[in-house]
Image 1 (cartoon, rainbow, N blue to C red):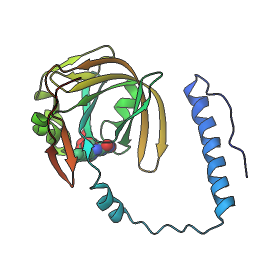
Image 2 (tube, protein in one colour):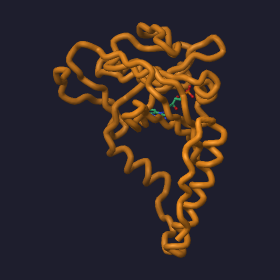
Image 3 (tube, rainbow, N blue to C red):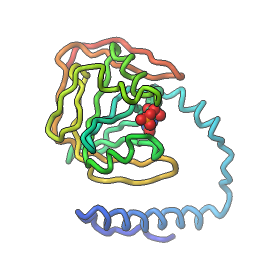
Image 4 (cartoon, rainbow, N blue to C red):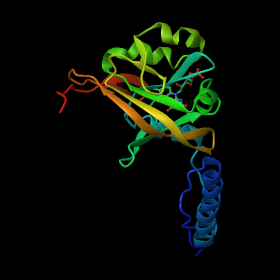
Length: 205
Ligand SMILES: Cc1cc2nc3c(=O)[nH]c(=O)nc-3n(C[C@H](O)[C@H](O)[C@H](O)COP(=O)(O)O)c2cc1C
């Protein structure tokens, strides 16, 4: 079995990405060596989409500011990554209009929507409404300069510290520089089975 490299993670991002690629190759080689060709994938994209429709997701607007203009999209692929340092990840399609703006600015804000924000979610998921996206809602800029939605359940203002490309998407790792939390009861906007819904609100702890 090929051992996985234990090279320490350097600060320089390009070196890190090259190092990551070599470790990914090691993992793939190990899988192939251990299993010969017994896994011949049968999953189709259609089946995958149907399965993922059953995964309830909190709805976020991921925003940035590049070339003197705000941009962003609606996303459910946000996840907590690390506690030390506080970091999160988000997966963004490389074909999305704002993908390169995230890369160029080097920062983004994750705005966690509450159930009253369904209209905003629809706006940020509709390619024909790109120009109108920031006309709705109250926005301000926190530490990084990415647009933060006032009234969101939480704003996670992040600097982009890593980017990994896989398939159709990039995984962006954001180190959280500033967090702003809403003070009211929480009633998150949820996306499930291709529709927006909500779940019982609860008092903040
Ligand atoms: C509920 C919901 C969640 C989504 N989550 C993601 C996501 O996590 N990553 C992503 O790249 N696109 C996601 N999308 C799709 C983009 O928001 C959509 O394609 C958007 O139009 C892309 O922005 P653009 O029009 O500026 O290219 C999601 C769409 C919806 C409706």
